[in-house]
Length: 292
Image (tube, rainbow, N blue to C red):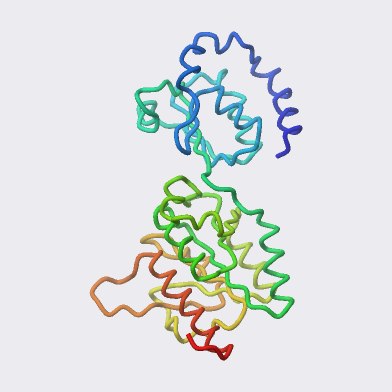
């Protein structure tokens, strides 16, 4: 949302919530030294509010303490809704673990992305242009990967494999946190990561643009080496333990598996991404006439 729109939103809610400097007077001494930010976290009423108003940083989600005064948090919750930022209520004691040295979080903490997301429409347009030009884009879609270390490792693999980008869902999935950035070891600076609200709608759109959608499943009949990756392709990887959601799996053009030889039924999702992406690379390099 543009800054002017956020300013308008502020004026709209002031009549309802009657924000005045006096509302924060009792907490100003605490705010000066402590209620700013630590790592990828912003805490305190005014810092979080200003971050939402400025709209120049990507806020992933907001935690609000149970029992916090609605009057003081009203505009924060309003702007969170306007910007499609998730917010959750949680016991006040849970917030303490996110701030250092007992800093006064004032009942509100915001988690800020450690890297910028790529505009979804722009990434799709780039992929479609490649397909129309006869190229073979390779993208990755993550269906509910929640562990930030797994996401970071996947992004590192995607960068090393030269894939064109990654799509992740808005909800119930890890975002670009500081932990992800560390696990990715620099890959977040290069990989285009876009968020989508509905993965199944994305799948339908990709298929309409002649991109094959290949999901991973331990129950699949086709081994990953048997699938021909010499086509425009979107690889879908499921979340830890759960795999692909049923409807997502049903929408795929094909499902492939990595055969297991040991007693454990599946690989870690970040390892599986590397196995399949580099098989796709092997096939594409071999078909081009170059030796791997």
